[in-house]
Length: 399
Image (cartoon, rainbow, N blue to C red):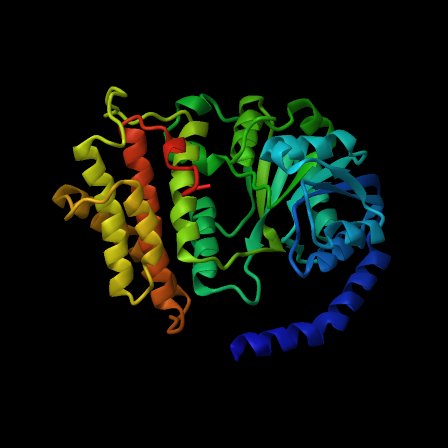
């Protein structure tokens, strides 16, 4: 009901918002510069037309071009793009790489400012890119991202995830963040380096001259924005993230997705930051080692147990248990670690509930997804600890 009311209010206010943007269009001084917006696509959400329309109407530039880098859409994505006169570059699905696909768009972009964004992030205002460009120029920065705000139909987990991410990035500061002059970046602790790597490809604006010198890593399959942040910092460029500007973006997905996501995330972050656990053993263990297998199975069994306690269907965990050829019972040490990690994450969620006045609807759903976050992250840590290759589990199960 609340979502229906909110949606109605948004629709009712649409004309007012458009009127405000027209007023702004007539009062701001247009920059004698062009904007290129690059959107990577492979099929798109129902509101893709709204995204293209809002970017085509961005104010404050002498020209706006929209570039679609598409890797095999079979819906109406390209039809909409052609309707709005977008430049379209098509690549084969098997050729897609997060870094390379963004470089393809950058290579054909003619703008003074280049935005990389995704096909389901909606600009919050029609002057978003103008305000971001002014701040980027004013700071002499190479790149700047903006925060995300959840969609009106976002579930509680999506809202909390966004809140906790920006709590980590911004802390208690209610202001934009700029990073420059970082000395000995590569010798900093992993968490500090992660906090400084603030570029987010959901929306990032680049100074065209600077990004065309640095570029993304062509071969990276994931976390291309983290690696680009590191490259910018190591080259002495200034980067930023704005709390004052935003795109509307969130996802509501099933539990298994987050089990996969946090397994992959933990591995990738350690790959990007070149972290090896201090207690890394010789790589003479395999997934068939009985003691190791019991630890891995324990993680999945504990995740399954928590889902059952919360009244959530855990049947999807069976394929993972079968992959490890199941074992009976759980390792006490693993159980202690699992419970400790779950408690730490859950406490963060409880803080969120207190700060936002509390929720009734959706709390168990969040706790179930915290369980799969715990399982996926811990499984990843064990893979790294014993020198196992993540692709041993990322075939049919974790793709």
